[in-house]
Image (cartoon, rainbow, N blue to C red; front, side):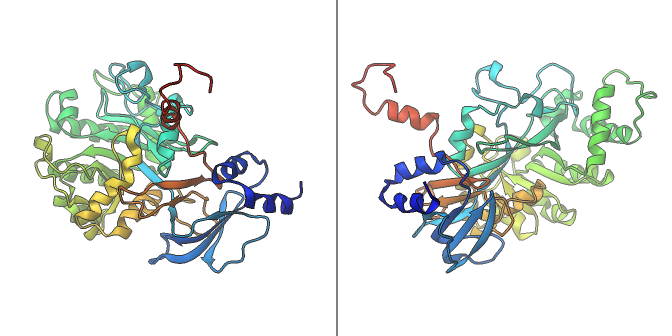
Length: 422
C-alpha cells in the first residue's frame, strides 16, 4: 500500500487501533505532534498551538504554523502539553526487581570487599518489569547506581534508556560513595576516618602503579585502585550521598583537592551551605520528601531546600529515591514548586539540567537535532491529576502498557476463571 493510502486510512481508525498500527508498521519514523502547548525548555516561554516534527529518532523542527509533510503520522495534541521526557537522577533500574528478595537485588555489596571497582552495568537486566511501569509516566532515561554497601565508595553507576531499544547507554558514568554515620561504622566508627580513607585512596590512585602497589590491611586491591585511577582520568563526577552540612563542606574540599566535579545525593542540609556549593559548581540531587528529620544528620531538613539551592545558583535535579515509583518523580518536583521553586526550574531539573549534570548531550530539550524523547501530557505534568497520554523515546511511540495495566485488565472481570487464556 502506498504511503498516501495508508495516511488516508488512518482517519477511520479508533485511537487504540491507530496506536497499534503506529507501533507495528515497520520503517516509518516520521511523526508530527500538532496543536500542543510545547515547552522546549531551551526557550523561556512555551509555544502555543505548536507542532513538533520528528524524523529518524531526532527532533526535526519545533514551531507554530509549521507545514506537516503529507507522509508524517499526526498525533493530535490539541489542549495537551508537550515536554521533553523526564530523567531520573538516582535509581536502580535493571538492578532490582523485588525489594525483599535478595536474588533480585544486584545494587549493593553486603560482604565481598569491592569498592570503586564495583561496576553495576555488568548485572543490568533490560527485561525488568519496572521499566515499562515507570516509562508510562514519562521517564525516558535514568542513572542506575550502586547502593551504599560495605565501603564508603559504593561503585560505578551507568546511564540507561527506558525505551524499547538499547538499555545500557553508558557504563561507568559516575563514581558513587557515601559520607555519614553509616560509612563511619565501616571505617571504625568515626567520620574522620571515612574522610581520611577517601582522601588517601584518591591520592594513591593518582600515582598508582600495579607493579609497585603493595596493599596493606584494609587497603583497596589492585583491581580497585586501577579502577579508581581510570575514573580519576575520565572526568566523570563524584556522587556522594551526604546530608549533614558539615560533611557536605568536607565533600566539597575532597572533590576540590582532586579536581573532581561533585554531585551531592540527598543533601537534606544542603541549603545551609548553598553558597559554597554554588561557588564550586556542584549539583544536588534533591529528595523533596525529606521534609522532617529522620536522623541526627538531617536535623536541618526543610521543605524549601530545592528553592533555596536554586536561588543561590546551585544546579538542582531530582530523584524519587524509589525505583519502583520513579514515576512519582514529576509530582515530587511539584512539591518543590509548592515550597518556592519556580515551575520552570522544576521542569528544567527534570529534563535539561539533569541531562547537563550527567553529560547526556542530546536530550533534555525539544530543539532541532536533539534526541526525540518527549511526552504528551493531559495537563500540567507536575500535578497529581494529570498523566502521560503518549511517551516517545528516540522517536518511537512507546506502548502505553505494563504488567500493572495487564493485571488491571485481567481482573476487571472477576467472573472469569483463574488462568483463562488472554
